[in-house]
Structures are given as C-alpha cells and as structure tokens.
Image (cartoon, rainbow, N blue to C red; front, side, top):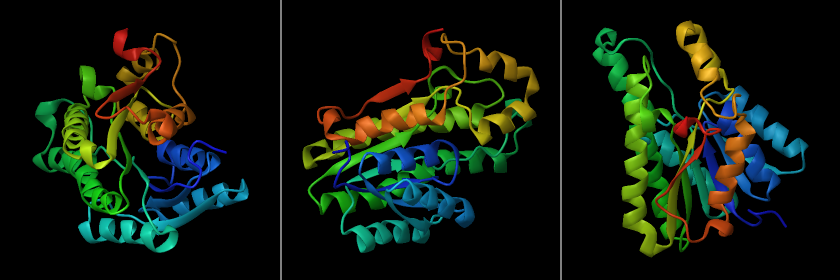
Length: 252
C-alpha cells in the first residue's frame, strides 16, 4: 500500500509546476485528491494524468483569493470523498520583481495576498474539516527566499517568511487536536514561474542556477516527495517544521 492509502486530500495550485507534481505523487501513493486550480484546463489536465496512471482525482475550480471559492473547494472534497485528511497549499503568485523602491503599493500588496493571505484563507477552511474528522496533516509551500532573502524579489520573500510563522503558530494551536502543520521550502526549482523570473531578471538567472551546493536546479517531483512524507503517518511526530528541499542552497 502507498504512504497515503485511504486518505482524502486537496492540493491547491495543482494545474502546473510544483502543485501538479504534488497532486500526481499523492495519487501515486494512494490518496484520493481534489485538484484545485484557477485554470480549469490545466487542472483538468492534471486530473487526466492522475487517472491515466490509475489514480483517483477530481477537479475543483479554485481562486484562493476568493473566500467563497476556497470554501467551495473544501466542500467539494467532503462531497466527493467524505472527509479531508491531508492538504497541500501550493497556490501562490508573485506579482512582480525588481528594486523595492520601484514596487507599486498595488504590486506589493497583491504579492502578500497571493502568497501569504491566501495560504491562511485555505487553512481557515481546511482546519475545521480536519477537526470534524479527528485530525489531519497540512503542508504549506514556502520558499528558501524566506530564509535568506532574495534580491529583486522582496515582496515574495517577505510573504513566504510570513508563511513560515503562520505554519509554526498554527501548528502550536492545533497539535493537541490532532492536526499536524508543516511547510516545505523549495530552493530553485524548474517551474514555469522560475523560468519567467529568469526572463524578467536575467542578471540573477545564472547565480540562482548555481545556488545549490548540488550545482543544479531542483525538479518539482523532488518537492512532491517531501510533501508526501510530511502528509504521511511516517511523519506522525513532526509538526511546526520547515523542511528545506534546496540542494543545500540554504547553507551555500
């Protein structure tokens, strides 16, 4: 049996990149999952990939900036699978990059909302569903930019730093009620978002490609493996932790 056999879950931002890899890996380990994304075509493509490999998944439209949409996502999990055991909050979006004095207030605020506030909003509805089921496991996707800062990506780094303390604080609140809450902090991972950042900030690209002591970019599937572990019963005594999956980037 897989590590997540007989568990029901949700993965946000699962239409591409890290979120898609997580949803696919969770299904491969036996979970039945709702694939949530604001891009219906890409989300349904993820579902098709899971089902094509013999897994179980359903699609739910998910705009994680809209509270009613988030509420509906969790209601979909309960309606389809009867409960919520695991959740991975992967959906995030940086609205811009560049020197901090050139940021507009709108771009800065939108980045905080899309990376921090939206993670809290998902947890707001995931946690009651898990409490009604006697517990569960939540994994938030942070970033190594939150640990050491990242030039020309300040709003994103600040927002993800907030995700780290959101994770730790909520783990302290709900551990006694059977909910484990951890975060995974990816290094530089080969995703569409990273490729876009390389295009916007070419002077940063080469340095970031060599940021890991392993001297390569990470792959989305490597993040997925860490998430599956933290969602599984093998991590039953782990909560409030930030796991860096960065090829040693944080120590270089």
